[in-house]
Amino acid sequence: MKNISILGSTGSIGTQTLDIIRNNPKEFKAVGLAANSNIGLLKKQIDDFNVGAVAVMDREKAELLKEKTNINVYSGIEGIMKIAALSETDTVVNSLVGSIGIKPTIGAIKNKKNIALANKETLVAAGSIVMQEAEKNNVKIMPIDSEHSAIFQCIEGKGIEQVKKIIITASGGPFRDYTKEKLKNIKVKDALRHPTWKMGNKITIDSATLMNKGFEVIEAHWLYNIPYEKIEIIVHPQSIIHSLVEFKDNSTLAQLSFPDMRIPIQYALSYPKRLESKAKEMKLAEIKELTFEKPNFELFPCLKYAYDAGIRGGTLPAVLNAANEVAVNNFLEGRIKFIDIPKTISNAMESHKIIKNPSLNQILNADKNARIEAEVTANTDLSEK
Ligand code: MN3
Image (cartoon, rainbow, N blue to C red; front, side, top):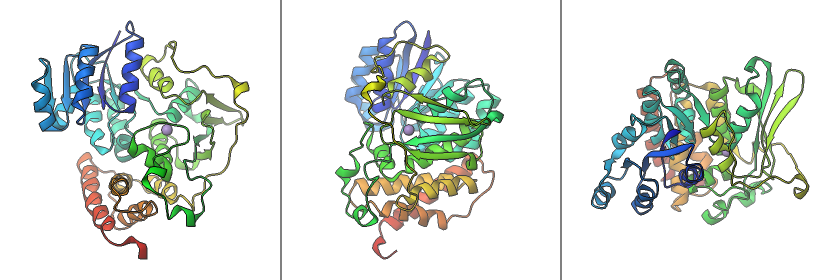
């Protein structure tokens, strides 16, 4: 029996994780939950899963929840840190959105918890520190993301020195065959319509700009200790192959399934065991074709910025991530255009002075300053740039 804490329990990954726990009561128990502000759903989760403690990021909402339950309700980032470090927890699922997820991941690692990681920003911004801490504390970081789970499954037991390259698949997002002209007029609702995956708003926009794929490149670099020149992206609109690993002898392994996050989430929790799944069985004959094309770096400059930030390293990936969060937020709230997202990011990157081998504080500082910079850019007229 594994005891699980879920950070971000009311989001898309969080609720799917709870479905898996519900379906496997002999394998898993939810012991702690943390949410941003959705206390209605959180209260239901407390009752359904009989958890011992929860945290709510929003302090006012936490107070409201306290009146409705007898269990421990913590609040703010310290509260989330508490849920990440509960003594009875074996594995922490981190599905928080944004760089707010960095500190709880590191806190959990220091408390010797295994991590099932869906919070991309943790590795994008603080990959070097997180991987060092994980090694020092002998803690496993299991990827929840479908691509990294696929890579993990292909690489498992083979040794990274045998790997020639990693090929990360991308659906290409909803604007894959758009022209530059057409990208100028994208509405928020168009960008929120992802062709193959149903996800939260922030990651859906990141998928439309392909920044999500850029983040996945940086994450793969840290998770598998592989240099950027050995990480490629291939657009595969059907999202059936979740990623591939090519070995020295030019033999390539791939992992396939219908797109359903319950498969990688469950494997991150059950590893090395495989459990039955409610996800749909894959019938190859139903899938008429699997197609592949090169990603368009010119149409989606976020990809280029992500490789650039990863290769130059230091605090730059934290800036990439923070500026992106601000830009996406401004886009979602209608203040900037879709094509202004990459502009906001490149401005923040250009004005940042990289610190090599940064401490956690230096990373968090870079994050903070990049947010201010990006907020200023987003509030000026970007059409001239
Ligand atoms: Mn993914």
